[in-house]
Amino acid sequence: MLARRVIPCLDVHDGQVTRGVQFGRAEDGGLRNVGDPVALAVRYNDQGADEMVFFDITATAQGRASMISVIERAADQCFMPLTVGGGIRTLDDMGMMLKAGADKVSINSSALSNPELIRSGAEKFGSQCIVVSIDCKRTSPGIWEVFSAGGRKATGLDAVEWAVRAVGMGAGEIVLNSIDADGTRAGFDLEVTRRVSESVGVPVVASGGAGTLEHMAEVLEAGRADAVLAASIFHFGTYTVRQVKEYLAGRGLPVRLN
View 1 (cartoon, one colour):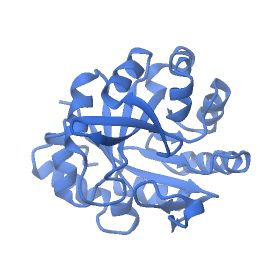
View 2 (cartoon, one colour; view 1 turned 90 degrees about the horizontal axis):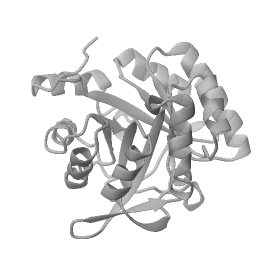
View 3 (tube, helix red, strand yellow; view 1 turned 90 degrees about the vertical axis):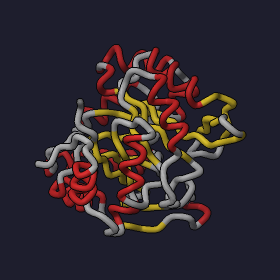
């Protein structure tokens, strides 16, 4: 059985890590400054994180230059794989981030507006480099709709169907973000995570809602996820990555304790 992964996530805005709730935005005053992304990445690297995800939530020309610098510095100081997303719209954008030191690139709105980007990215860089991130929200019982533009724009797409299509086009991993649970620390959306996990043949990373050690175990067990992604519980010192891993190991889940 493959080891389950524990992945801290850094949302980077103007060169600093921020944290919101249910996709709160900078223009709404809904973001809280957390700290320097490279310093946090080094901390989590030392705690034994399996990977690190950076999301450029500025996604402007200025933000892009800042993010390249962040990835270069993090890659120089950390030994875990790095994933970067936010504003990646072309093969050149992908290549730029991979050259800077990222191991994977994550695409979301750009994949929705141009699904062929998934296929062309996988063909040029390999499926292992292409992550499709899906922001979804429960819109009726048993239905989760995909949203783009940072959770602001409804697409009309079913989250499970979109995940299956993305994998069919070459995505090597799915990050499933619950807008309802994001930043609430009330637990992951187990049902949609399980449905997506059982529908695709690639790893699924559960995101949105981590608040307790029990939540992390539940989404790996009942939600059938391959990895858990969290932000607030790590950034604000509720738990360390090592504490999460030791708890999961105690539950009988395979993790890397190095």
